Image (cartoon, rainbow, N blue to C red):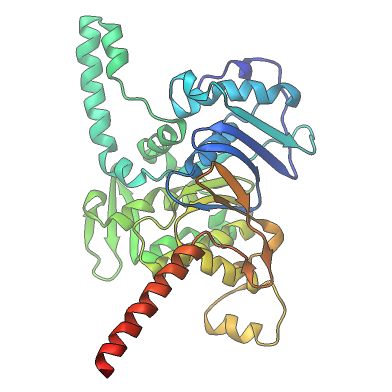
Length: 373
């Protein structure tokens, strides 16, 4: 846990209806205003600041007990170096501001949970890292060389550290059940059904059971797509609470396009079940499916027939008022995406898709000319 001195000061809880964040000079982000929705989506090219936005907002919500709002912005800005685990000079000109339009005691901010982009490596190497660290600590403490100990213990950004802690604590995680088990049981098996597997923890060991063959594999021998969604399944099944906010970096990681579409539907099912979702994505398939779910919010004569044909339900419908989408740009900004009756007006992938189609059309035309000559 990140140590924050202002947590020890007199504080009260905050409840929000609309939460707006303003970020300045935080990594690749020079200027961005982000309003959280029930579903918040951040798109953009590589190295344009998506992760900086995600980690900054996650870190704020993680440290959700604060003193008066008017003093909050300056205090949290000073803690950004701890959230990212970097030298303070990296954020010497940074500013993090939050504007909360209502404060009601004693309700609290949403509790965040994060699935980082490093999740497959964490799943694969967490135990080995712990073993090596413990051996190192034993050796160095015997020599009482605390400076050397300090230098050799790995430290990560807060979101990654919390992702590791969740994996490390899996034996305790499975001792509880989330509200979804009673109210939305189909959501706690959604990922297993999608991948055709069953996740289990047996005697402290993570195993994967293939539903078709009943073959049992240790999780490290399963596919990267199966490992990538292990944490999400565990959280949905055992820890999720109404009002929580789920952060997912690149939910499409290692997934076939068919399953990327299914993940988009899961995100919307979750917000309709009462869980807020914040995602960054490079997936055009996810954006296109979100657009489909946005269009289902319209009333049109064939709506029921189309929904029945493709097994959509009312819980798959995404209302425009629940969505906040942004595209990050190379100039350090993050601009909001507007919606209309056809979904998001921009996707963040339009330029690449248009160029690819133009190249394809030119190649096809050239081949046709050759065949005709």
